[in-house]
Length: 154
Image 1 (cartoon, one colour):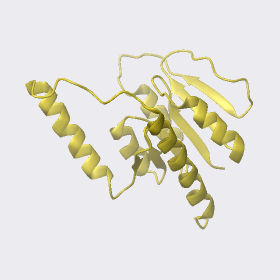
Image 2: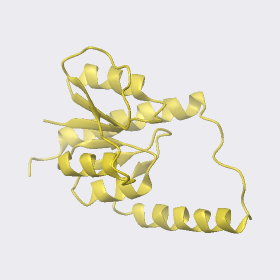
Image 3: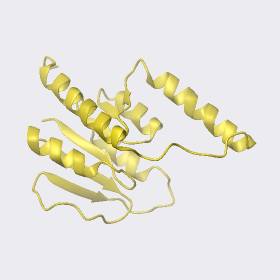
Image 4: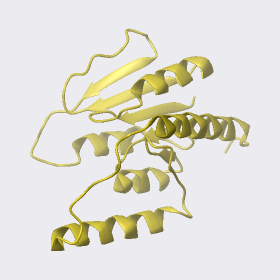
């Protein structure tokens, strides 16, 4: 069964994920470093990971559980890459879909931006999250779910 995993600590589209998942009858698992308030639906699960000094505890849990066709919602490009390696789908809260064809460019851009920030060339971050981002996310999530449902079983 198709499952949506959310890298939940700073995800601005959790409510949208709930609405779409409910419409399609999908399970949702939120993975976070601390407790979050979530709706009390049987199909919504919260996994709170214990801080162990490791940075990627939440990411590791998602990668361990995700399977082919499942969906991960995360800003983390490295997590998206790891999930794609397991034949899962990945998109960020602004509606950017990561695919095997696009992930290399995304990783390279991430590295370049980190280098430019380190050198002090770039000091700002992303533009504030906007209504258009939310709308694009909803559109792309819906398209991904429908694509997965139409795909022949493996």
